[in-house]
Structures are given as C-alpha cells and as structure tokens.
Image (cartoon, rainbow, N blue to C red; front, side, top):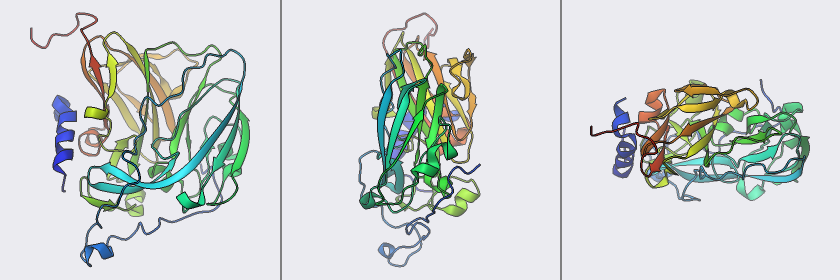
Length: 362
C-alpha cells in the first residue's frame, strides 16, 4: 500500500485519539467504459495503475450544509424539480482519481425537501455530452412502478423524462439509479435523499448536515496513487477499496469539517447508498440524543443512542446537543472502514462549555 504524505497527515490528524480505537429498474444496461483494465498505454506496458487523470471538479463531496431550508408552509404545494446526471473524474483522496457517476455533479445527489402532501413534478435529464450510459431514478418516497424508475429511464441524448408524484408519506428516504447495473452506478455515486416533513414539521434545530456513505470498488489499493478503475470482481465479493462519506476519503475533516458552536443542537441526515454494506453510524464524543431510526419521523425518536445500524438503501436522522467544545467525529463503527478506508467526518465545535461536564485537566 502506498499513501501520499499529505493524505497520511490528514488521516492521522482526523483520527486523533480515536485512531486507536428487489430490482427496481429493468431496462437497458451498460458496462464501465475501459474500467476493467489494469494496464494502460501510459504505463509503457508495465503492470499497475495508469497515471491519475485530470479532474473535472476540485471536490466531488457535496457540502454537508447544502440542504434546503425547513418547511415553513402549512398547505400542500407544487414543486418543479430538475435533476441532471453527470459523469466526471474527481479525486477520492489526493493523487487518487476515479470516474464518478452522479446526480448534479456531486456525491450524494442534492437533497430534495418537501412537506407531506406536496406534489412534485420531476424532470430527469441525461445529457449526451456528460454521460455514456442509461440512467433513471428510484425514489423510496414514491408510490409507483420502481419508485419512478421505469418511467424515468433515459439514455444519453434522449429527451428528458418527467413524472409527477405526491409525497404521501413522511420520512427521510433514499433515491438512487436503478438500471440493471444499479450496484455499479450507486457505488460510483448515484444516490441521494428526499426529506418529506410531516404536516406539523420537524423540531427546530440550530444546524443541519447531510452525509452520504457508500463503497468504492476499484482495481487499486487504498492510497495507491494513480487512476482507479471500477472493479466488478471486488464488488461481487463485497470487498471495497474505500468506504467514504460524501464521495471522498476523509474529505469532511480538517479545513472541510462541519462547524458548530457550543450550546447548539444539530441534526444529521445520513444516507447509506451502499450498495452492499450496512453502516454502524456513531458520533465519537457524543450520542444521538434523539434518533429517528430508519428515517421514521412519525414515531417518537429513540433516546441517547450510541451506535445505530443503517442498512444500504436507507436514510436516517439523528440529533445531538453540543455542550462542550472539541471535535465530534462521525464514523462507521465497523472501524476498519473509519481508520483505513475513509469513513470519517468531523464537526468542529467551538466556544466555551455550555455546561460543566468535562475537564481534560482536572
């Protein structure tokens, strides 16, 4: 295994002390474009990865604060939503590139936020110049064939597809591409979340964050510099190279960590795209004081949950109070994924203690 010096420093700083610790779509199909080869002309015939490719974006990771504002209306509304697919090269970590498939150019796809009873008209586009495969959208919040996947199946350059649906049941739900190669597409970044708030809304919090976990199956090793192609055999064996939040290994740490202040309450929406692994989401140095298991927003939330399973294809929500300063590290507590494969994010909490609960120098 090789690791860049910059990424090794980022990894160690992020870990700190904790470092010791049924098919919805049925139309069409595709194969990776040149993604199965482990040799490349750029390597002069030598075995190994090709050189890292030029990236299309600085960061594939969606900003965790990129969330629509809370619902403030009391009667059903109509919403026009357009989602475009985009296939692009970006870094998993410094010096390691991968060709992602995305909704709207980042991972996870944009959060859609509506109220119970709202009507959504969805326009789905697959631009010919940005894609090489057929795509669609399966919403777990939709009554309808394939959650809308059958009606939204579009090939590159086809006219956009359009569906209309009522958000009839509240909760937090995942959406994802659901063509027959859906595991490949989801692993490459094609998933996101839709939040359907109950009629009475959600309790007010000071801040909200949006995280998406998924696995990357590549033909390289963790930290190996170069361009990582998709590896179907690794996916079939369910042996990922990386397990990441928002598409990047340790991409929500250090300068890109989430920010909060002592005394605040925060809510985290956590989507597990998978396609295969159940997450064990845990906030190090805190608990989920109110945990909406499996995205259930109608039942009274569970209290003071330390670690919770999040199945692939599930979005959940958890709230935390922040009484003391310091980092809160959010991890998949299948800890090899956090310590070695990328599944770690941070909330940097600043300010004076809100309550006298902790003293590191008694």
